[in-house]
Structure formats: C-alpha cells, structure tokens
Amino acid sequence: MHGQLMKCMKRHQLADMIYIGSDGGVTKRRVRLLRLRQDSVTAYCFLRQERRTFKIDRILSVRPVYGHEKQPG
Image (tube, rainbow, N blue to C red; front, top):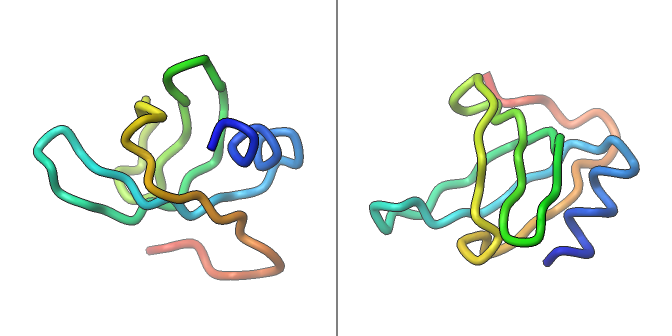
C-alpha cells in the first residue's frame, strides 16, 4: 500500500481510495496526496473539502485517477 501511495504522490496524481473510518464505515474518497509517513498519509479530501490524515492500515485500496476523470462535486 505504501508503494502505491508513494507513486501517486510523486506523480502528483489524484487517487481514489477506499477507506475504513474510525466508526467502521467504509467510504470512497478522492484525494490529492500531500505527505506520506510510515503509518499515515495526509491528503486533501475532495469529499470533505479539507486536509485530512488517514491511517494507512485502514486504507483498503488506492487507485490512481488517469486522464480527465471528473472530480466529485
């Protein structure tokens, strides 16, 4: 997971992420990765429209956004 996050961040790509929140709910987030640490990633979250920190062990999948896919409203 760490490797995929690093690739997206280095390429300045947006990423679609499936994430388990602290309440146990699963959400899909489109993010712009800003900072990667050993156990967390800081990213701009388009769903919440703010900078958020995500724990890497709660990320289920990360997919780079290619081309001109629309950002979520």
